[in-house]
Amino acid sequence: MQSTTRRRLLKLGLGGGVLLGIGGVWAFFDSSDELPLEVKRSLRVLSPREYLVIQAISKRLFREGDSSSPRSPFPDPVVVDVGARVDAFLRSLEAQDQRDFKRLLQLCEHLFPWLAGHFGRFTKLSGDAQDAVLRAMERSSFGVLRGAFQVVKSVCALAYFSSPATWAAIGYDGPLVNRPAGGWTRRVDGVE
Image (tube, rainbow, N blue to C red; front, side, top):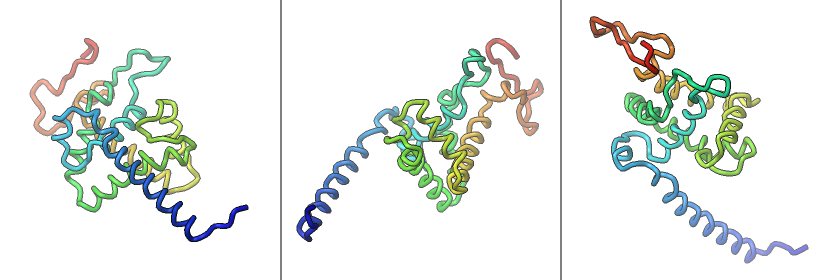
């Protein structure tokens, strides 16, 4: 067995640093290129990458129907633009709360998949693997992970169900304040 010398340790440390640096540069240019320029410009709190994490999580939490219900009255979370709605909600929070939520999104993207046994970013995993990560967070024996899941789920639900496009599906006719004379009617698949 080879003994570890200071020189070998220094080489390993420098080599690891170079690999981390290359990975960081690659990650910087990786995923946010998927967003249209107008979406990137509209974000005030979230970075483009964080927006994509929110969109990916919301697609798993609020899917359009399932195999037993092929035509769900619930709109696609991407159409509702949960990411932009979360960004708008975060604007009303204190700067420290914004930073904490953004850190949580980074953990959802990078760490939580690894803890669930999936080696890759959350946004790059398959739908089934993303479901497994969220399920592992929700059912974790660690209260911190369960709490993190509840925070992300609650903020996504707030953003999703605050959209008028979802109201008819849950039987909600909109707020009473500033209500039009005919109410807040919305048509979903030809049904009022």
